[in-house]
Image 1 (cartoon, rainbow, N blue to C red):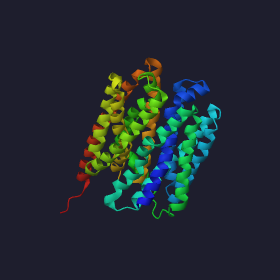
Image 2: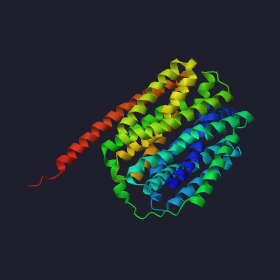
Image 3: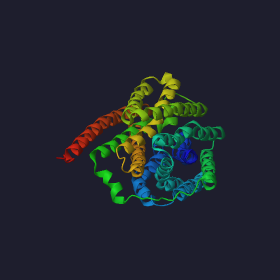
Image 4: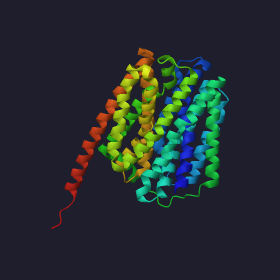
Length: 390
């Protein structure tokens, strides 16, 4: 069961490097194409928006196919589009090949998690999910800063896409050679899965995750530009900051995995509150950039894991579809956070980005409380509906 989880994690490293590796090279891309940093940011926001809009439908459609086949096709798409991106096509084409694999990103993640969980005992489900999602932390500590560093050293942003392509190729080879065939033996009906969308508590959890991820990406989307302009850091130093940020996320992910085993809501609330409060330090204490980036990274990466677990826990009857919705709403948050912060930056300057982070984080905390109230109400109604035996 761990083999499936670790191969899924390797694939996720390639996928996350593709999605977020562009963050460190946005200033170079903007300069190369003679466009604003906000327009360059559409390479991230458009990717995330496609995931948000198409993710659940794609996941539902492909949920009955062999899981190995789905994972292989998904990562192959990332490989092909990565090669085209590295050839520095016109910006419109670069944007197009950026969004094409986004249609399959949530499909891969949901399939990898479902496959890993299906091979595990009930008590190990969160551990297997943490291993797969650990690919996010690994990408932020290894391939994302490496891609940024190489692009900065040689002055060629295209090399960032080369790194992404190499990781995708390694993941594809691992899947073709080491993954067993994983046909779906029992597929739930579309209606049974879609039914979770009628529950107010689940919808509240989705809005919470979207606001939380939006808060995270108001400033992280412009990480390189923020540290360069506000903290006056060189490209080499920014690469080191990305490395520290990612490294801090690994123990953060470990702690989150432990806390999720005790309380999904508690773990989610702790990291959400932390990511909200760190925005104040980022804004008011630029001289403490290094320790703040470390704490920020510790809090940032686990939010992907806690957000997914939070939505799955809200819909245990359809975990695969709930996970795809978590990815979808999370990427909607990426798109919204990047767009909102882009507007704040163009109106008030890059230093104001953390204020958007604080406002959206506070909104997410409010939705977490709303979801808990709605869920408690649903449980009360369910108890009243149970017939009393004579």
